[in-house]
Each structure stands twice: as C-alpha cells, then as structure tokens.
Amino acid sequence: MKAGKFSKTGASVRRTLIKSAALPLLAGVLGMSASGAALAQDGVAGYPSRAVTIVVPFPAGGATDITARVVAEGLSKKWGQSVVVENRPGAGGNLGSENVARAQPDGYTLVLGVTGSHGINISLYKNMRYDPRKDFEPITQATLYPNAIVVNNNVPANNLSELIALLKKDPTQYSYGSDGNGTASHLGMELLKNKGGFEIAHIPYRGSTPMVTDLLGGQIQVGITGLPAVQAYAKSGKLKLIALTTADRFSSAPDYQTVAEQGFPGFAAPPWSGFFAPKGTPKALVEKISADMREVMADPAAKAKMVAAGSEFTPSTPDQFRAFVDQEITKWAEAVKISGASVD
Image (cartoon, rainbow, N blue to C red; front, side, top):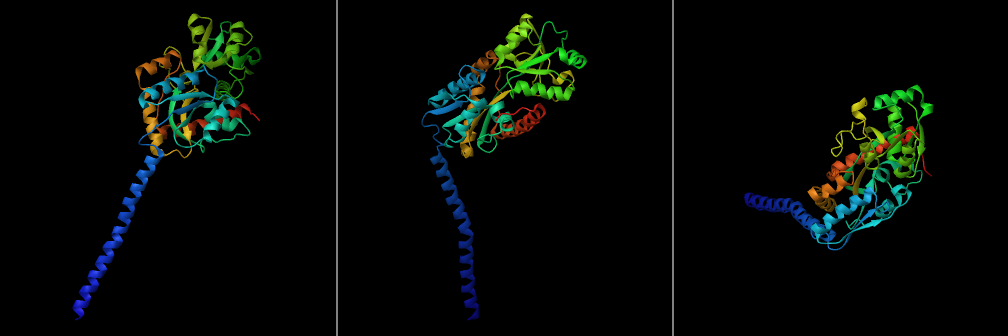
C-alpha cells in the first residue's frame, strides 16, 4: 500500500519537474519569436522600404558633402531606394547633428558626422545640446585625410625639425593660419606646439581659401589645412609642404612625411568623417547599414572618386568606430584645454 502511494507520488513529482523545466524553454522560444517579430517590425528584414536621408551638417560642395553623396549613390543602387543627402549647416556641424540625434531611431535618418561635430565640439562648446557618445549609434567610419603643415617659400625650412628650430630661435617672426578657432587644423597645431615645446602666434581664418591666399602672399609664414587645399601649390613649388598629420603616410600622397616620423612618434591629428544613427536604433539594423556602407566603400569606382577629392575611405565596424570616437573625444579634449579655445 505504501509502495503504491510512493509510486504515484513519485510520478506526480516527475511530471511537475518536467513542466517546470519546460516553462523556461517555452518562454525562451516565445521570447525568440517575439524578438524576431520585433526585428521585422523595426524594418531590419525589409529595410529600407522607403527613402533614407543622410544629413550633412555642412554646406554643399565640401569634402563631407562629397563623401555623403558618393556613399548615398552606392546605397541607392544597392537598396533600390532613394538615399537623399540633406545639407543642414550651422554651429560647426552642431545644428544638423542635433537634428539627427532627435530623429526617430528607425534607420531612415542618419548623419555624416566629422571630427568637429563628434570629436571636438563636446569640449569646445559651452552649451552643447547633444552628446556624441550618448545620443548616437556609431555605424562606420567613412573617411580620413591629413591636414598639411605648409610654409611660404621665404621660410628657410624644408622639414619639421628645421621649422621648429626657427620657431624656438625667434617665434616673434612667424605666425600660422588655420581653418578657424577650434577646428582640427588649429587644435592639431596646438597639440604639436605643446609636444614640441615651441611657440607661434595663431591667426584663425574662415576656411582654407583665405588662409592659403595670405600664405602665398606672405602675410603669414606657416599654414595648416586639409591636404587637398594645398597639394597643387606644393607640387608646383609655390609652397613647401613640411608634414602631414596622419599617423602613417597618406597612400594618395606617399612622398610627404608625417609629423610622427619627424620626431613625434604616435602623433596623429587628422580630420575624419563617419556615419551615425540616432541612439536606440536596433543593433541588427545598425549592423546591416554598416555592412552595406562598407560594401559600397569597397567599390573601386567609389574609392577612385574619393581619391580624386583628396581623401580616402576608411570603413570600420560599429564597435571599431565607437572605440575610435571615444579615443578622439579624449584626444581633442586635451587639445581644447591646451589651446584655451571655447565657444559660447
């Protein structure tokens, strides 16, 4: 009698245990189904089903705009949907970037951020309305190109060591021009001044064109700006190109030495650009957009267009780009502190 009761009780316990073990498994299956449905609802599987907008936070015609349009053209062909480039300039890239930070995180509004908007401005501007780390999902780095340190032909220096020696001997005789206060060109030179222990007065300009004009005319003796703005003058002998700010020699201009190889190992302060989505964009969607963009940037025709524009593609995964942006924010914060620059 007792044995029978024991057998029934044991069977009941076993059934209870089986049901208990099955519940988490069933919940997991249901969770996976819900997750799959959520992904489908977020548009990952069928993305994009309508036009995608890439915001460029600068005027049309510049290097950032060209980059966005080359990538947009490739994506449009791949996706079979319109990819619209929309220029929203203002406040050093802040206005357009803020607009995207507040957009729906559905993959249909992206921004092509740059060194300033997503690396420098968080330390430069006193009243930033977005945080490049907290308000965006990094997708992929797009480009990187060197700033070039150049001198007027009357300056008796042909390399960085000779230029620094002149500046240490009599800094009052020289001044340098940049693309403007708080730009990568200005802050890159301030980093170099700090590491090299020399002084030279800074003359900020509104972009490279007026700065190069004064450099050619002798109103300033030294300039730092994007390589595309001065490469033709260097090749024709109208200016002397002293150094590039990339970590390694630039593949499109391999004859020019870097700052790093002229006594400053590890020095790197080149401008860059990269694509971002609003914070909260599903990870699977970010991964898809990143993979598709990297495929477009690997196309030989697209790469040739960037080289012709004086830049080159430097695609990366979302995780790689996130780590890069973190490093850039830290580096440029140091440069802003050293320079004393700020914007209200």
